Image 1 (cartoon, rainbow, N blue to C red):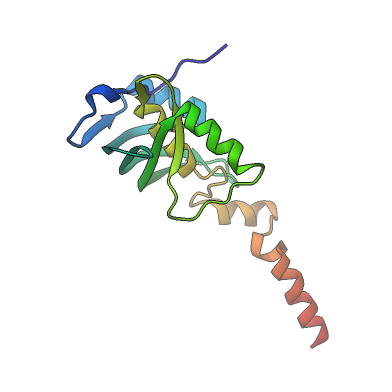
Image 2: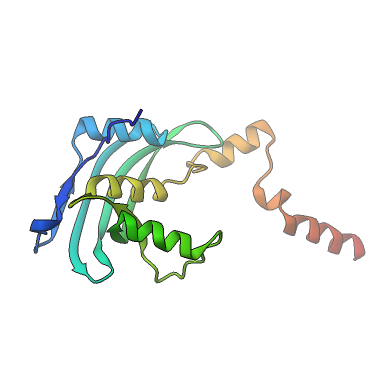
Length: 177
């Protein structure tokens, strides 16, 4: 069973917008997205998008801004997070996408300049869902809030630097003098 899309903004490719598109999530959409992403709340979500049809598909560029509330991975306290990032996407017909994936084989190596590619079918793509997925990639699942250090000290937790691979190398170096 397919779940409902929380932030759907279909774009008909037969009437592709020629000007910049603005997308704003309403309160209900933001609450549903927060549940989906496992965060406390999304206070605001806005995105701009410029769509340009090309030979390889529809390229979309723009900016996402969001105000989130997340729980600190260390203390559990809620804290605000601001997201502001540029994005670049390419929508391609589903058949072209599947053919490219088969041709690529098991490993696909992307360069930094490559666009995230999203398949669509028919003559409509869902720009809102693409924005939601792009926002999800911006959310740090292990975000640390301002009280993280105090919580580490209170519960005797070490920092990643004290337990990481470089800490072991440092200990060896200190042992050897």
